Length: 254
Image (cartoon, rainbow, N blue to C red):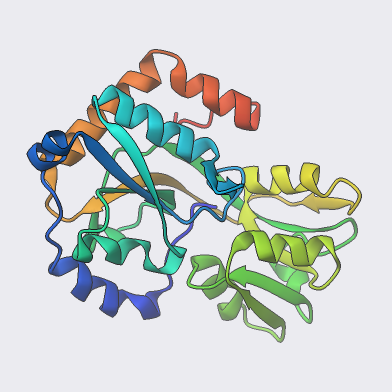
């Protein structure tokens, strides 16, 4: 989705991030464990089946840890709270399709981009697929996302339902409870396949940005080590393998 937190949460996040006492690279290496956090609610990027973390970003995180000589340990948090965990030292790295924005870079540091994509409107066939077509429609978006803010700012009447996860919003479109949802283009493609009998379609990109892995502000040594591991998997073919397995294409930033 290239998800971005809504601006009304920024004061809280900035305050939390400023007090972060994250583990240094040396402390992470001494423990032998890389603690990774994700929302596990955004198939096919990150999700859970039978209590097991799965998805492209989970497999990528496992590769990152392996190339750093560390054991990956996964932690689930709500998307809205992921960037505050560094303040409580709950985890070392967040992989949850966070868009890299100038505002967020004031709160946390990011790895180099690990994927690129765009957000599109998803609807049933014949439904609204452009911003102008959303007037008077029932719309959905994930709580705390830039997509929600985008829909709220549209200068006409519409009905917006806020969902806890994007998967919940997509499900609502598939079952005809809302008319459209703004989601990542590859997430939309996955939804079309998952709900094959719902006649879902999606439109042209509404906005796009690269996504990165988040770290506590100022944790430079760990960020550089993560970037080095990411470079390895980009070069040795393992990134391409999991990307093509998941999406059918290589989603690295060109």
